[in-house]
Amino acid sequence: MVIIVGNQKGGAGKSTLTMLLSNYLTMVKGNEVTLLDMDYQKSIFQLYEKAKILENDELYEVVEAELQYFPSIFKVLSQKKDKIILIDLPGKLDDNGLIPVFQGADMVLIPFTYDSLTYHSTIIFCLVVKKINPNAKRLIVG
Image (cartoon, rainbow, N blue to C red; front, side, top):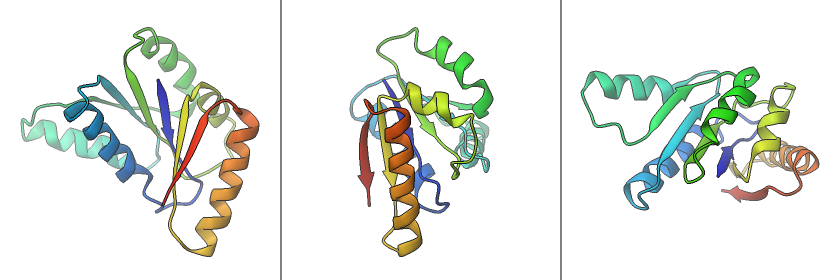
């Protein structure tokens, strides 16, 4: 299963939601999770690297990934059918590299905050995802 977490608005909580969901799926549900950090800030990957320095147990794999490499990464990761792939997307929509990511998604989680700028960008994000992948389940989290 591929779950993407995205919104074109920065600061909507994409990375936080991705990490919380990864922790829940591994610690509570016992799922095997690989997290792809495709956000330009790479904040999840940086935290993951810091945790390795502290010799903390790795609950799930975090991969620093670029949009253009998604098709190759997806081909490898999707071979294991019971694995959950979580993807933290960059806060943008103007990159054709997002198209295969949207096409590969089974579910799209769309975090947002209650302000007019975020609301409008969330609606646009939802419409674009629906047009590219009408079969993906979409859930707005606010």
